[in-house]
Image 1: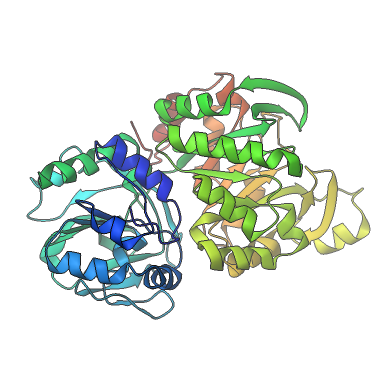
Image 2: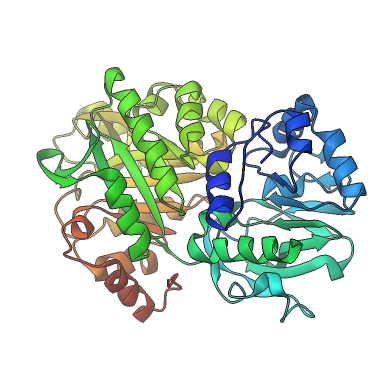
Length: 201
Length: 265
């Protein structure tokens, strides 16, 4: 669990522990490099998250990790910052995944805050990561969402106002990201984390 | 809109214990905050709010300890408020495991605090907590003059009437970066007479951020009313839940019957 000063690492660790992982929190690159998987929590403004992540020296680790197809899980802004341009503060992301981060339009309540339905994307109805998750509600709190360039990387979607079918679970190579907070989504969230951990072994 | 209307239980905490009284007097002890939080999580509550109602500085460490123990016990979001005065206070609570912090009096004294907190921890973690009342004929002249919407702010648990219009204030809180408004009616607080729908509606009509209706919940139907009639994104109640007068399931049944999307566990 990369502790780079971006919010609620404690809850994220607890969520992964509840899902059967042996999670540890670290702000040290060498310590993180010894893990089997990396988790990027993320709460707050993407520019400050990116600044903190860069200052932590973790970007090189993440780049290397993703390049070698080792497992990475990004949560909310921790997922968004892996993409390219973000509309939040006109920010340039890490660009490790092709895609962009967009904002909801103000035709609805923003932030999108609360428990919303996770729907399997076309072609992912039987995706093991969504077992016991698709059709259930998870906890969202965000004004922006990542859109991969390749729609095939969208595993699940959610609807909010004009943004029907915005991506809420993405997977590209060894990277999985969720726009909702699995660590704050009760048993359903733990199930998704268990599904992902099971897929690694 | 498919997002579920949130049902929130509020736990007023002093000295590490949960209490809830009528209009903040005659406090009754309803138990251990950590045990209650875990029980609410199991019962299917969508979110929790912890209000530190003493909020003297020597109690702060007690609250941080409560927050960290709650974070270890629940897997749903929760906010902390009461006596938070600075960005450092906010960071301390979030680091201890809270998802959101609520500013009330400190924001009235210095609204820029909301902007500073939003810049530091993100809007999604900053709640503008507001205690408001209807303007009465015996209100001070400056309060009546300021409150063009018919509703004004109060501080000190409703004891001090502020010459600030509620609707103007909510607009300003949104502009400064608050991610959510927790709107408590001091007229209805503890009365169980139902939410102040008109007041809540006056706010939801002018802001795009979520509004939590608070103050006056007496029945499951009241909760549904605040969503349907006042367009609130969430409803908050305390004693009706703490003392088992309304179950979380019962609340959601009433809301579902009214056509409101709810989260089932």
